[in-house]
Length: 169
Image (cartoon, rainbow, N blue to C red; front, side, top):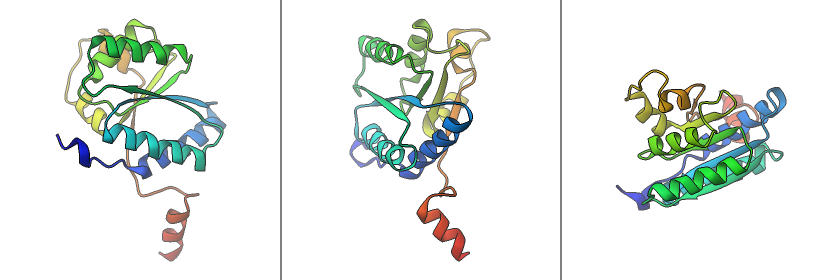
């Protein structure tokens, strides 16, 4: 794993912030907990997301929860406990190879699979999830109900670079 060379996709973070701004108007989403590995990819993604929220959705409250890259069960329990204590209903994660442990613990602690919480996954995590099949009504099956994927696009109306590009074409 080339941990040192991962680069975040700031446009994805911007899209989440813009969608968050729209959700704020439509659905009332103003609070988002972000769970990430404490590595170059996770930290860069969080940094890009913080900048995007500052620029495009300044009313959105972000709570970042770093999980050690070499997380053990206790680290995951602690991270989910912190997420639960926020009382937030929306969670975003870039965590890929331990997403099952994260979601199982979120289910155990009552912040996944309730119909009251939504988990949003980075594209890489969502692609891993699609490769698996979960037993009906199992904790992972229930935890994934209503989940969403954040995908990267070149921009959206309201982003200066996107607007300039569209204007020229």
